[in-house]
Structure formats: structure tokens, C-alpha cells
Image 1 (cartoon, rainbow, N blue to C red):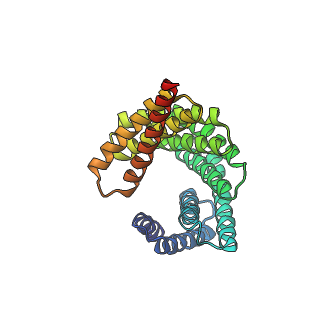
Image 2 (image 1 turned 90 degrees about the vertical axis):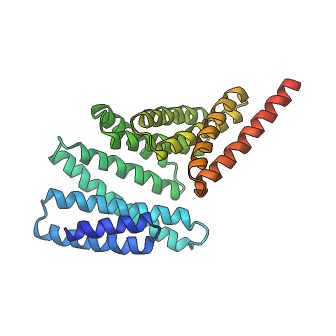
Length: 274
């Protein structure tokens, strides 16, 4: 119970932006769980909680690398990546074992897929093309899981995010046509989620999918298609900015989307004039 309380406090600290305190709480929870496993090494609940904690710690490191990319020294970055990959590999081993031992528990399969997705995030930070392999593996696993549990919105949400990750990875690897298809998969997934749950995060992610599709279609000179998707994205972002005027992220993406839309309209006019 104490370990769970510390993990919960760590998640609250993370949500509030206090990553240092979150790390300390995660480390305390991990130490307690390892102590418990020494006394009862086959305790599935403690193994599960340790695995979830390792995922949280690795995710915190990924966020720090993104947030402090320019400030981190090369050796600090390498150490964070190494520690995170070690944590995720341990979590993968735990959830693979739990999946074998409790095959009727889909939560273990979900956490295993999240491990693969987090490992792909780390490969991205390391600059390795292996990210595609791990995102694709996570997507394949999550598709089966989501299909088997259509009413579990958590599974659908993680799958939608994995589609988005894979689309971005395809784009980074200059596979534009495949990236467009993946963004459409993510868009369809977020549309379904928005119908099931009319929450702002689903609307925001849907707008990001549409903005990405629009910008990629513009890069392929398909300006009419690009206009449609960029307009949809801009309208959704406009709705979010009106609702949350102090939310910097919404305003930033609306501005970028508006500029992309203006460029597409200008290119269309040039094409019409020609």
C-alpha cells in the first residue's frame, strides 16, 4: 500500500510538472516493491506494480530528454537512455512472464504493448531506425487487444496513440505515403474515441492527425485535399482555444495550422492563375 501511495504521489508530481519529486517517489516505490519480491518472488500483483513503475520511470526520462534536449550534456543523455532502456527491458520480461502465467488477463498484454511503445520512443531518442520495428510491434499487438475488447476505451486510446507514433516514425524515415496512411488510421481511431468520449484531449489529438495529413498532402502537391484537412484541424483547434484561451499548446498548434493553411491557399491560387 505504501509503494502504491508513493507511485500515486509521483504521478501527481509529474502531472504538476515537478519531475524531480516524481522521480524520487517512483524510486521509493520501486525499492519497496523489490523488497517485497525478495520475500515473495512469485507475487503477481507486486510484479505487475513493479513493471508499471518501471514504465513510469522510463517515460519520465523520455519526457526529460524531450524537455531538456538542448541543455543535457551528451553523457547525461546517454545515461538517461541507458537507464530507461534497462528499465523497459526489465518491464518487458515481467509482463511477458505475467502474460504467460495469466493469459486471461488482458491488462498484462496492454502493459506489454506500452513497453514496446516506450522502447520505440527510446530508440527514437537514440536516433535508431529500429523505432519502426517496435512501434509496428506495439500496433500489431494493440490491434488484436482492441479488437478483442472493443468496449475498453483505454485499449482504444493507447492504440490510437501508437498509430500516431508509427505515423510520425514513418515520416521521419521519409516514407511519406505510408505516413499518410498511418495518420488516417490514427484519425479514424480518434474519431471513434471522440464519439465514445467527448473530451478535449480526443478532440486535440484528432486535430493533430488532420493537421499532419493536410501538411503531408500539401508536400505531395495535393492542395485541395490538404485544404480540407487543414481547415478541419484549424476549426477544431479554434474551438479548443476559445474554450481554453490560456492553453499555450492549443494556441501554438492553431497558429501553425493557420500558417500551413494560408500557404496551401496561396499555392492553390498560384496554380489556378497558372
